[in-house]
Length: 195
Picture 1 (cartoon, rainbow, N blue to C red):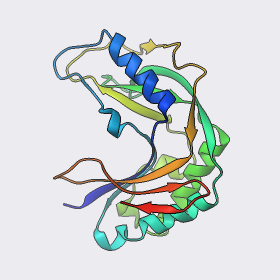
Picture 2 (picture 1 turned 90 degrees about the horizontal axis):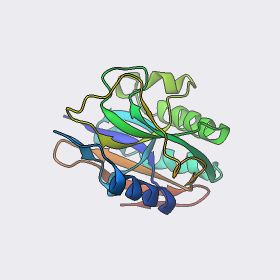
Picture 3 (picture 1 turned 90 degrees about the vertical axis):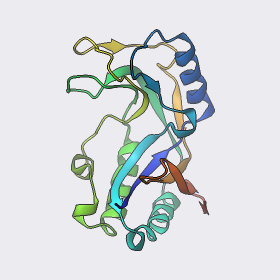
Picture 4 (picture 1 turned 135 degrees about the vertical axis):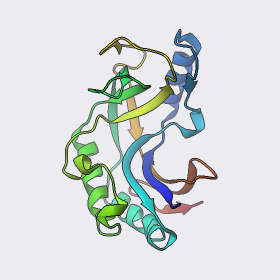
């Protein structure tokens, strides 16, 4: 089985603190409920999909090229809500972000760069590749067997108006043996760091 690859944006201290407060005061619980570990919280900028070693060797170069031409930016937090949108049952709790123009430009640049490396069978999220917004979000919790009323929203004032500083992009690999392995990191307008 081939590994699965992602380009992600890590949370900054301000978002981590807000998530910590949400965890402390959350009343959500039940069978199978589990918070995403803080060390793996992320906003996915591009889900690449499955790729073998021959293809994945090119990923950090492509990521570095995009980052070299992308200015750091911020994204405003919108709300905390049950997810996925427009689907039932709700199985997760997400922190939603406002999709702004720098976000759209970044995701389009990443899609173009990685389309030149991966074959269509190796890629995913065709909506994103067509430039449609796919609810920028961080998954905070998996709800397990908790049943959530249809279309609920959990507005949390501690997040509304806060911003995520986007300064770093990370190349992450999931494999059957080990989840969420950081394989490389680039600073926007900066050099790459290989892990």
